[in-house]
Structure formats: structure tokens, C-alpha cells
Length: 400
Image (cartoon, rainbow, N blue to C red; front, top):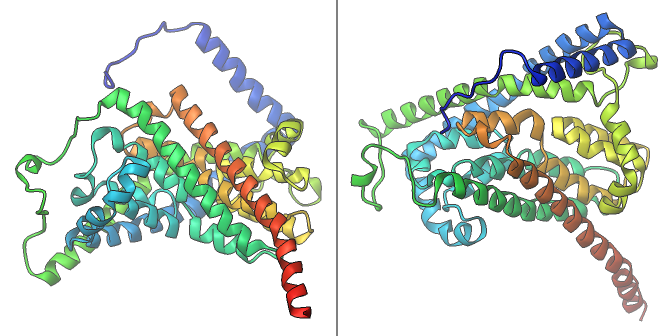
């Protein structure tokens, strides 16, 4: 059972291994950065993440919660579920209402789907095994609008077309991700169990629950209650963002200006990019990056999509990015979109954190994301390969 306590010896091999790994990690980082600088960087990075990331996500959650509250109160969720259920069910095995979560996350960020998950008129359409997959669905489309528009504006030939192809890759990746997650949750929850409202069994399928009062009163209450749920969700993800994202950034970034460690936020030892360089013989043929520096994008996207987009912009400025790279980077920044910093926290907020550590989550994460990149890579290569012949034919037709 999920609530069952596990017992272990007070001190055992696990304790010894943890102490060795813990002190080895921080002693190694301290030797490179300096112990004082390392501690200052940890604190400053956590503070910057809280102020610029967590509160930003909380603001998004509040606005998304307010809008979703209005959607729920005035029947838009029920309408969307009825219209799109014929599409969402065969593709994602989710009710049509899940498409609102896609829209919310695409226009904002991953946790925006959590505010919908607390709406009674939304979650009533989901069975227990489908609820954890909301995290996968939201993560696949998080920051989609910001990522796409940024990639389109880069000074790279074919950036517009490449960004659109990247979105297609993200869609395919979302289908694979959700389907794999549902395979695991069906075994855990079954396909028929459904926790719902006390009155749900008595509620006709053609009816929905609304607040008492006039239209104006219902509007204000739905707006405020939805915003309040957004605040709760924003607070719930803070521990995961600060704890995980700080460590990821510490292992991704390098020293400050002039190659000197000062203890400022965002500094670190670039261990993950170094690992990426060592694995480039596998990653470069798989992703087809133009330059080896492109390996840093998927690694950085694990912690922060915003940071990964910044890496792409810097690479585009020096001409190290092609249209093929833009397609893959777009899919990466959408589908990976802060996996380590928000995905775990979102699972915890949904009450499904026990599913995060299972091997199925790793398979779900790695398989679907690799599939996304390979698909986007193949499609964009094909489109760019036929672009020049079509251009030549059109020029010949104009000459004649």
C-alpha cells in the first residue's frame, strides 16, 4: 500500500554509501570552486531560483488557476470534453477535457495543468489511472509558445519551418510519453477505479456542478478560488525546484567572468556537459547536431528550458546552429522542459510521487524523448533536402 511504512536498520550499508557519495560530491565541488564559493553559490542559486523561477511559476499558476476556474464554472470544460473526446481518447487514452491542459501548458509552463487538476468539473472526467499522466501531458507542451517564438526569431535559415517541425516532434513525443505512463498506472490503479465527488454517482452525465448565486457572484468566486488553488500549487513545487534545479545548475554551468569563481548565482562545475562530450559519439549521430556544443542543450533543458533556450541563442549568435538543430532543440526544450526541476514536484503535487522513482518513469522519460528527437531529426532532414530542388524548379519555371 502507498501509505505503508518501510523499516530498515538504523545504520547499514545504505547509510555508508550515502555518506561516501554525499561527502565525495561536495568535497570534489569544493576543491574546484572553493568551499566558501561553493556554499555561497548554492545559497545564491537557490535564492535566484526562488525569486525568478518559483515565483514566476506561481504567478503563472495563479493566472491559469483563475482562468481554469472560470472555464469550469461556465461550462467550457464540459463543452471541450464533449467535442474533443473523439480525438483525445484514441490518441492519448484521455478524456477530451485534457486538451485544455495542453493549451494551458503551451501558453505558459508545465505546472499550469495542476490548477485544472483541482477543478471538480475537470477531474471528474478522469479515472485514477489517467490522473498521473497529466504530468506527462503538461510537461510535453510546457513553455511551448515561448520556445517556439524564440526559436523562430533566431538568425538561422529556415528557423520558422524548423520550429514548426519541432512542435510536431513534441506532439508525437507527448503521445508516447502519456501512453507509456498509462501502461504503468493501469497496473497500479486498474482501469475502472475512479475517485470523485461524493455526489458524482448521482450526477447525470449531462449536468455539471456550479456555485450558488448570481452570474457576477459566480464569476468573482470562480476567479478567486481558482487563483487560490494556483497559489497552493505554486507553493507545492518550490521544494522540488529549489532542491533539484540548484544541483543541476551547479553541475551544468562553469565559473564566472574571467574564469574565476566568486560565489555568485549560476556558477558551477560543468560536469554534465563534460559527460555529454564523452558521449557525443552516441548523441551526435542520434540527434545530428551541427556542433558538439549542442550536447549542452538537452542536458541544460533537464533543469531549465529557459536556460536551454539561452544556450541556443548564444550558439546561433556565433553560427553554430543549423535549421536541423533548431527543430531538435525546439522539441527538446518543450518535451524535456525542466524535467528535473518541475516534473518530480508536479507528481508530488498530484499525490503520485511514488510513481516518479519507478523504473517505468525512466523508461517513459528516456524512450519518449529520444523518439521525439529522432523523429524531428528525420523529418527536418527530409524537408530541407527537398527545399533546394523545389527552389531550383521554381526558378527554372520563372526563367521560361
